[in-house]
Image 1 (cartoon, rainbow, N blue to C red):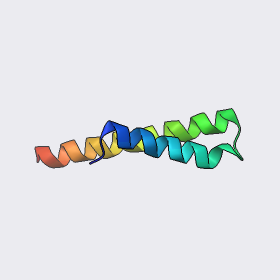
Image 2: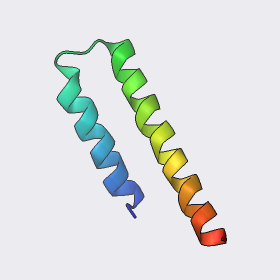
Image 3: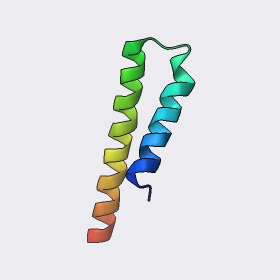
Image 4: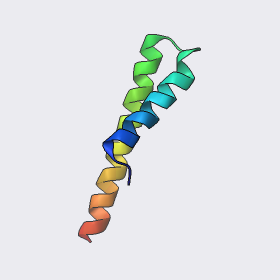
Length: 51
């Protein structure tokens, strides 16, 4: 499990890798995608622990 600092570094790294070729709107979509995936993964973890 990643802590907040690691998470931010990963998101920043992904955004930086893509920033050269991406417009601002595409970059914000990437953040949204990353966050949606994280939320889904966290929900899965919570559900798994609850079972």
